[in-house]
Length: 138
Image (tube, rainbow, N blue to C red):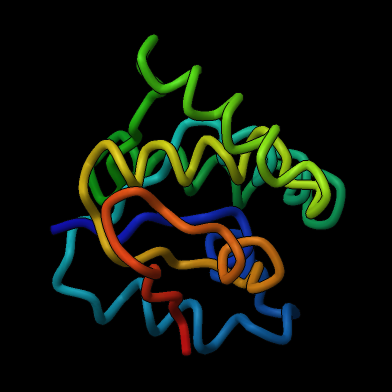
C-alpha cells in the first residue's frame, strides 16, 4: 500500500511555520506505507516553497526523492482521459488539473488513502474504485 501525497501535506511538512506542519510531518514520518507523490504535485510544491521559503526545502525534498524516501508516480497516457473526465464532471467545484491527476493516479493504483488538506475537493469527488477516500491527516 502507498500513501498518496497531495500538495498541502507535502508543503506543510516542509514549512515549520505552517499551521498544519506538526500533524503533516507526523503523518509522513509515522506511516508504514510507501510515500507516493503524483508528479503533477511537484511543480505546485516547488512554486509554494520557492515563493515562501527559498530553494533549500525543495532541494531537500528532491534529495529525499533521490534516496527513495518518496516515490514519484507519473501520469500514464491512459490517465489523461480520466483527468479530463474528472475536471469536466466537477467543473462546478473548480477541480483543477493537479487534483484530478492525483485522483486518477489513486484510482489506477487502487489506493484508498490520500494525504490532503483539500477537503473541499477530495470529499466531494467519488472515485471509481471505492465509495469514498480516506482523507489524512484527520
